[in-house]
Amino acid sequence: METQGHLIVDIARLDSEGETFSGETAADVLEMGATPLFKPLGGIVYEIHVEQIDGEFLAQGRVSHRFQCVCSRCAEVFELTVEDPAFFANYPVAEAGEYVDLTPDMREAIILTLPGYPVCREECKGLCARCGVNLNHETCTCGPAQDGSWAALDQLVKR
Image 1 (tube, one colour):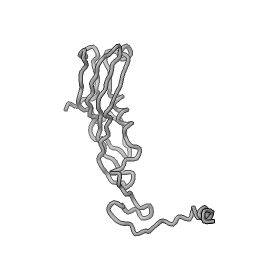
Image 2 (cartoon, helix red, strand yellow):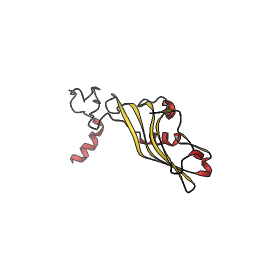
Image 3 (cartoon, rainbow, N blue to C red):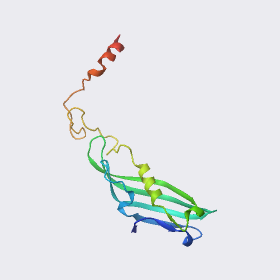
Image 4 (spheres, one colour):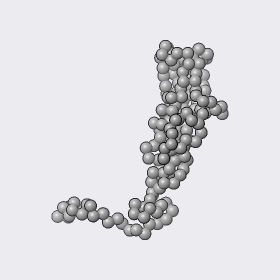
């Protein structure tokens, strides 16, 4: 798989029936910076068919990216691959110019597919709110939490 900085398409040299581009962008294309929950691993992997139809430049295909994440429930590190299997972008040819850089649209598609709160697996039990033990690996001995902040409302319900 070819790795390149950006996916830039030369419209003038585009085959009349369109072309399919596949490869991987450079690792720094996402420009996410340091985030506590997501660390990009590699670049954006893509397979995109581009063509010019009726004065528009169309790009459609699949984009994906691997991340090292911190689970928002148990704080364990895990790998996650996010994918947009229906990537689509279009530009009027007159506005597109001679070249079209698809990288910003691919970047946006990946960022929009990221979960707000990454979870290592759906059945993750998380951490005990009282003692902090990882409930996926150990059983907590704290017992049920006794929260007195709702006691006054509980009394109203019991009446």
